[in-house]
Image (tube, rainbow, N blue to C red; front, top):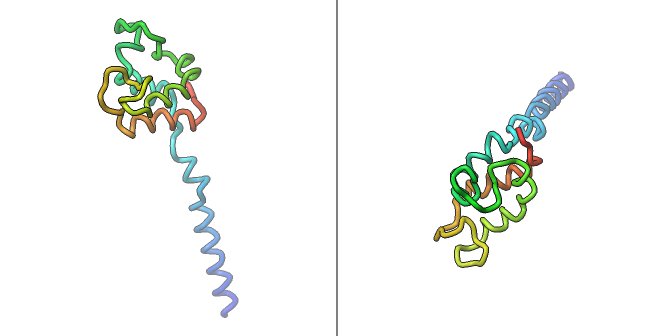
Length: 115
């Protein structure tokens, strides 16, 4: 009887762990994409300078190709302190909120997907 109990408990524990694995949890978290997640962040925080439709005359970041090419530099510059040379967003006196910086980092970590 004791063997049946032990085997049953092992089966229950194995099934429980199989459904709680990290890979299944990670699969449920949607990956960040440029179209769904990053383009709105850029429009809200990099305008008007980097949005040509709004009169910006700096490198356009309203398109996937330019952002994909410059993502490392963009992250570096938004992480600078406002007193540091090259700090972005230009003319702001505060850093962007951590959540916004993390949106750029997550997009890069997720593989810089377009859609």
